Image (cartoon, rainbow, N blue to C red; front, top):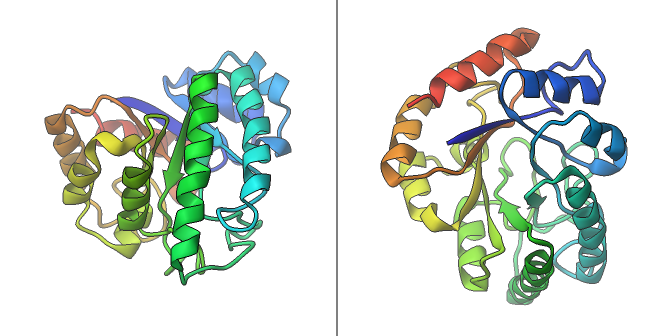
Length: 255
């Protein structure tokens, strides 16, 4: 398994480029969120390996689908600059507090159809560019109330229905534990649909070892499945100690 760390959530006293450098120096790939907030050329100049980034900055799977696709096209160009292989998606745009720009807990059939068509369009774009779009599950109980396609069971069903090799899951186990649980069976169910796995502990959304999730057991299950993809730490550092957070993450996923 390859390990990555989200630069948006650790070393918070440093500029983003220095965070990325610290992550790379520790032997991890780096991940970022909304690329429009950063100097992309400066990030590329760090020489870090980037694992994933936000794949759109506007639009949604409903009446904003065309705008989402246009925004995704811009994101692909940035991904090429950063040599970043995975672009992350949610069911709708999120505001600065993580709340949906267009709330949609109720998911009528037309929205499912529009989402599947939009993901197919994105998959075809990704095929030409050599990248992969990954649909992330979120939780509505704590962090993202009102987001459609939030549960892992929904994102799995949607990605499975699309059936495009360049559309995969960003399987976030923190969100899944808050909303669904049964994580080892979940990763086994998701199996070949996984583009990347993201982790944080519950409660608190800090690094493995600070909460209730048995991440060494999950790491062993992934190893037993033959999973050799990326696991990304998308977590706050407990007590602000980012070095310790990275060490705990590495330990939890050293099989």
